[in-house]
Length: 162
Image 1 (cartoon, one colour):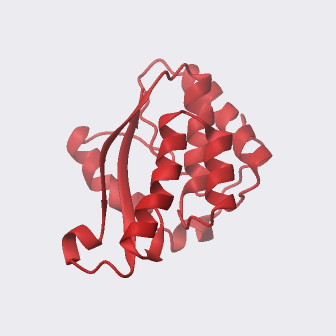
Image 2: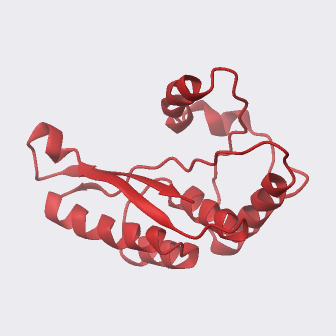
């Protein structure tokens, strides 16, 4: 919060947000005694996300321990499988290019209903500041791959940035 004065504690912001609770079991499996700093974003203006990303990078760079950064999001929602794959492909392309502004503009300009695009944008800014050189897509799927229903799906992607 010192590195980014616009941040503030807000218990209500975490009350209905579920992305953190979905991540915790996996993190506990990796490191049972891990510590974390949850950040929920209500702002979605690019300059604020860029400011946050720079601040996160500054804080992470000052740590003596390695830090794992996670931006949790699903991808496009409740459109056809074909349209969702096309939209998600454009967003994923920007993430793979380590292009925070491009991701932000693509999601907003093309109506991609990616819940955590703000967090992903800020994370990309931070990781670029920290010297990230590449990203890889681990897996992409839609809910239609599991349910067989392809009229209204949600997209999911797992990516790693190094």
